[in-house]
Length: 260
Image 1 (tube, rainbow, N blue to C red):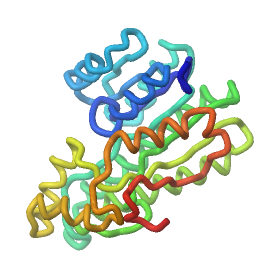
Image 2: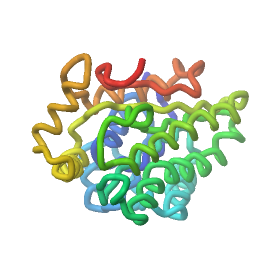
Image 3: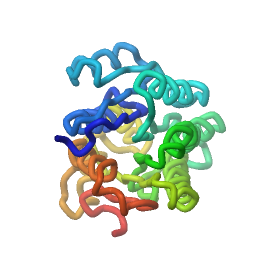
Image 4: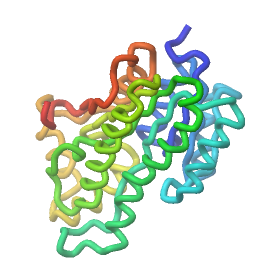
């Protein structure tokens, strides 16, 4: 018996990186997972890797589009009967530049990618959670949602701060309904997105990618990068029965690099 037996979880950006790691941890605990991602190829690859048959599904989703996020959640509920767990994992940024040089397009996309997508996912999931008196909303924020330690990513930092604000507001509004809402704040993890975006951020910062990674590691008390599995373990805790008394929290998985 797993801690998530019979639960249905929806995960945006669930085909790669942290999202896939959470999906894998959830199915290992007995959950059914529905993965959202823009790439059908990556979605099918994720299903093949999970290899749990009809306990996993993929729905093509653009987290920057409200109707697409709504469709992900509604399609999951239509297929599996409800939504018990919503993991808002989509996030990132591009168009990296210092504040004085950042374009309107990059700013707007950064806020939509990190904050609006989580709002849309939360709002859609609440339609199913509130009538059943049970739900777990988990927002994948960042330590940069608590601090600002890197240059050229103000749109990412602002978006993650907004995600944490949304987490707290949701917890306040639905604290007595059986629905919890928490944020996980990962530190540096070398995911596929980190490999892609990190190299470009490093270039904008005038350093190499290897120096970029080492600076992240040096910022941690452990002096090493964190892992997807560590974040996924926290997600399992928040999603399961032991998460009943945890809401409105922001939980660092960062090696001690952000305020305690």
